[in-house]
Image 1 (tube, rainbow, N blue to C red):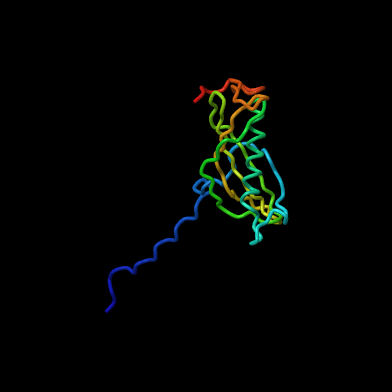
Image 2: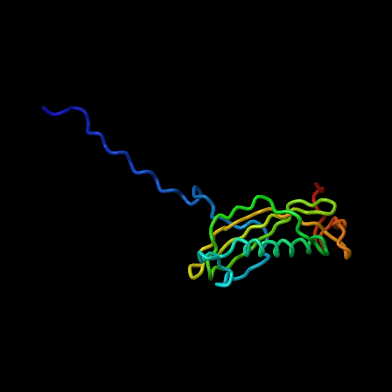
Length: 160
């Protein structure tokens, strides 16, 4: 005797994700400010690039962005919550991006991201980010007001 019920058919395979369903590729935030190659002299005993070298490149990039915005000298006074996500290897090109987040009377917060363009493959990965605080200073090293507008730009949003 045969079973009168129809045979269960297997469930159809899940549909392949459409391009609109896929997450967008990770993109750096801000403007490319510094780009340099990681060299053997920048490594630790494990052969990875020193975190301090990466931090130094980020501080230089933040200083460049800060000087442009403040139209004069700036000094670093704080770095917030820096986490190293991935190592940087010899031969990688370190690309550092900056974006001014907030401007006070004499200080500004600049978001800084470091991305590694991997040697040979050119695959790009975010390696760390942090928010740096810079203070504009005068020739005597005392805090000075940051101009309300950056050169060649439209007026800033209200200051925080």
